[in-house]
Length: 124
Image: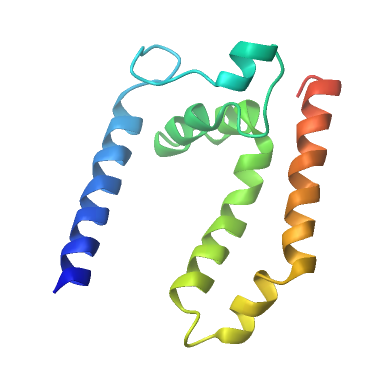
């Protein structure tokens, strides 16, 4: 019973967040927080633009999403795959183990760090 209630609460929260991000533009609304790393340093973090990406994708504007944070757009299928492997880890332990291996984790870490450096060096 607890798991059922937890699932309902999670789904409700996600749906509310989807509606909020669809209806309100993070660039125009003071409700959405600014990136603290950017505010403090003037440099973009790997996730800078993610709220605008979500808003753009929910409104069907792939070009704007790509402009705000191309790495996030490209990484969404990977995030979905990781979520799937977590949910299905009992049924597909091989997939879960491969995605959570040291090689996979370090590869994701390296990609994030490279993106972080590249977007600040080249202005992406």
